[in-house]
Image: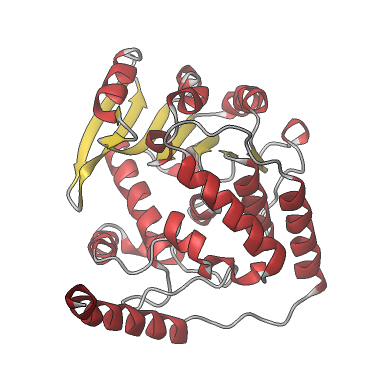
Length: 320
């Protein structure tokens, strides 16, 4: 009873912030024929996506997320998917205190460039960030990653030929790079259910998304889940210019065998943006990434602490 009473002020504050953000967030527009087609396609892909038969250690939570996501997609309105609890828990930053620090960094470092890039869209009906209602906490969070990467490597994403992201959430980082002028091929490697969600989101945003990896044209977005398709897609896309590998906490949360599917392709990449927690599911990620970087001495690596995530680090890399 005492613990319940202690949490009342925190719950009340959280509910008040969500209520304020809800008031600042535009309501969905009337359903269009295009919306209906996108929703039908998403539901078909989700309904036919097979769940993994076995779950490697450390991935049990993501298995539960897949089951929950499937239920939401098939029974609720996907036009408001960014409000579903499974999305808020797993891949959408809302009102954490560190977002204000990250927003302040953007304000102080070329705000003229970041301001239009973090303008939030109504797709998915995301909760707006109360301190800056033109955006969301999640979009600000992703912009902060890119801002530090660009500053550390002296490279703008608009100058790249290819970006490959491991575990792309619902497609927010991909959307952000497009806002920043990136027009190359963007590849997202993820579980089939999340690949379906990414295609739905990015198509709803009006971006060109390939129907299949093998038929993708230069500049299209490719969302895939097959390791062989990933290898072939990276080989094709990385030939079109400097390639960037992105994995923000996704690589370090994946089983070793799964993360190595992409990490073994490191020689195809000129740049790297990785964020990882020191330990996950019994894996010492500090040692893991230290050993991995030593195998690629042609890349200038930078490990940087994240002050507002004391147990996490950035790993930036630029090939000489």
